[in-house]
Image 1 (cartoon, rainbow, N blue to C red):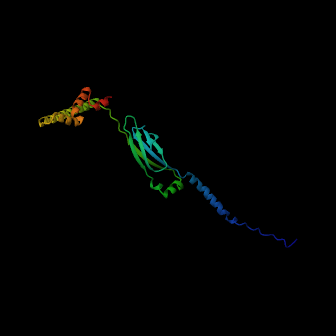
Image 2: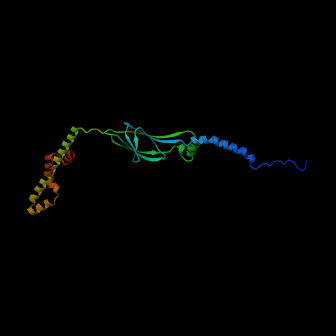
Image 3: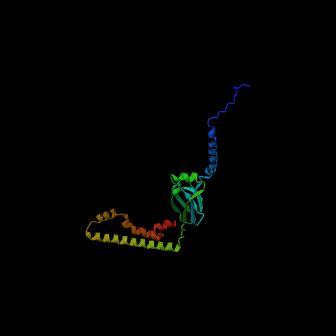
Length: 214
């Protein structure tokens, strides 16, 4: 047997000694991935309730649904809310949606990525709608009579003022033509207003009442 033939030691390849470390790192990453998969569950909700319920809700000009409403949103800021219900006055509300301290930079990264627990950030709005009261016919008639009496009193005052101006102008010795010119230059309201008001009252009330009746 040839003595020169001796077993040669097998040389180790570079990097083989570090394989256990790579395996540990891979196992650690796999154990952490489920946590990251469940993280980032921050639910932002705008909760709107009204009294009475079942009212239409419009958010920033778009119909969002009916109360009670859970409206999800993504960005914080100012939103305009309009709530409508039949036979009730509409409600207009401006709501400022502010982020809580744990969702502000730089803590928002920790809250939304590293914490594997669902978080709910709810902003509530409670609105009480005011009902529209029906108009009482007796009250409306009383108001119409009051306005008619005021109109008649105003017509009487204008008539007396016109007669007083005529009485003052007669003993002044001015020519009739001059008096007529002055009266023609005056606004038509001072001369014709009493007759017009009386004609309107005789025909069925003041102009405002006639418009309301029509």
